[in-house]
Every structure is written in structure tokens, then in C-alpha cells.
Length: 182
Ligand SMILES: O=P(O)(O)OC[C@H]1O[C@H](OP(=O)(O)OP(=O)(O)O)[C@H](O)[C@@H]1O
Ligand code: HPA
Image (cartoon, rainbow, N blue to C red; front, side):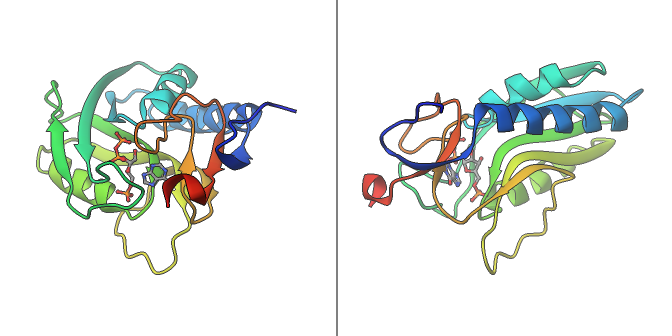
């Protein structure tokens, strides 16, 4: 039995689950992007852990860049306003861009990023999201081409995902005890 942080109510994805999920995504992406000009764009900070694993599970040549956007402030609810905190260093015009995200929750971050990056005229623009939260009634236009797993509509932490900058280093993904954030 893997040890769990005491603030975690229950583990949703163990280290072994994560390894299996990322391996599957990497194999799919490697197949789809063979012979293309792949650029992975990780959305800081949450996606760094997933990015590190995913890029090593992809066998075709690729470049990486990072963007930071923020909509969550310090708490567990999206502020609804997405802002760019750090832009790309790279010109993505004509390249095959894959946005790497840790989680799709309200969908606001990805909606904003897809709009913003499509103006830069990449050859293609897709999303690889490790988690897709099952939020009832969400209206989002973005359908990630690659989804690792679905998770329930609860606040999750670990594997890059934080609450107030904590828990990003947990090797599993788990549901945070509500008393920690309420
Ligand atoms: O679908 P949404 O409701 O927009 O939520 C998803 C985004 O929220 C989190 O980022 P956050 O803004 O908390 O910054 P972080 O990555 O630094 O934790 C997460 O990493 C995603 O980028
Ligand atoms: O459930 C979540 N956990 C951590 N960060 C997040 N950003 C959006 N949803 C979440």
C-alpha cells in the first residue's frame, strides 16, 4: 500500500496508474506526430510534472516551450479571468503545437489558450490533458485530442496539481480533504 499525505481523502491515481496512462498517451502521440514538427507547450506551473513524464514517453523529435497563465489565484475556485503571466519564447507559426495541461476543469484556461495560440498560425493546435474533470453543465468548446483520465468533480492535488502551491510534489493524484480548503 503506497503512503498518502494526511490531507488527502482518497487516492484516485496511483504512481502505477499514472505511469500506465502517460505511457499510453505517449505512444499515441508518437504515432500521430511521426514526421511532423512537434512543439509541446506546457502550461506552468501545474503541468510541469506531466510534461516531464510525457515528453520522455514520446519517441518522435520534439521541441518544448512553456507558458504561464493563471486563473485560480490562491484558492480552489477559478477567478474566471485568465491572464498570461509568461509568454512563449518560441515562434510557433507553421509548427505542430500540442498544449500539455495537467487538468481541464472549468475549461477557461484552455479556451483562452486555444484562442490566443491559434492567432499565431500554427500548422496544427491540439491539447493533451492528463485529467478531464467531470463537471456537470460545463460549456467548453475545447475537446482535448488526448485525455489521460477523467476525474470526479472534486478538488484534486498531486502530480503537479496544487492547492495554494502545496501538494504539487505528491506522486499520486488524490482528492483533497474539503476541510483543508473550506
Ligand atoms: O479548466 P480550468 O478551470 O481553467 O483549470 C485548469 C487550470 O487550472 C490550474 O492552473 P492554475 O491557474 O491554478 O495555475 P497553476 O498551474 O500554477 O497551478 C491547472 O494547472 C490548469 O492550468
Ligand atoms: O482540482 C483542481 N486541483 C488543482 N488545481 C486545479 N485547477 C483546476 N482544478 C484544479
